[in-house]
Image (cartoon, rainbow, N blue to C red; front, side, top):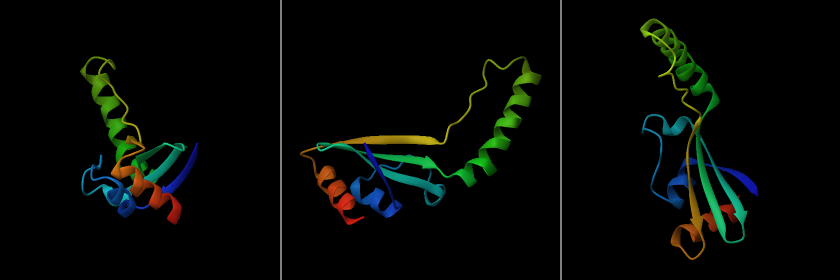
Length: 104
């Protein structure tokens, strides 16, 4: 399994769907993973600086709210990982992913 960082432009070229809100997209990290000869996967994560600045304080406030409200049973940590798409062979997306993979 090989992994390469790609740009948001390459992400959009491979496929249209983007997991992040429009304002967060420039702050995300994108990667293309070659799992084998017949399969790619593209992956999207929130960048570390954004995650530390926005999500850590929100989690602290959420913990305090849950403790005040009666317990931590509803507490949930939002992760950096936003999602991934498998790209199988014999599809138009696979051809575009292979083109991006070879160009880098």
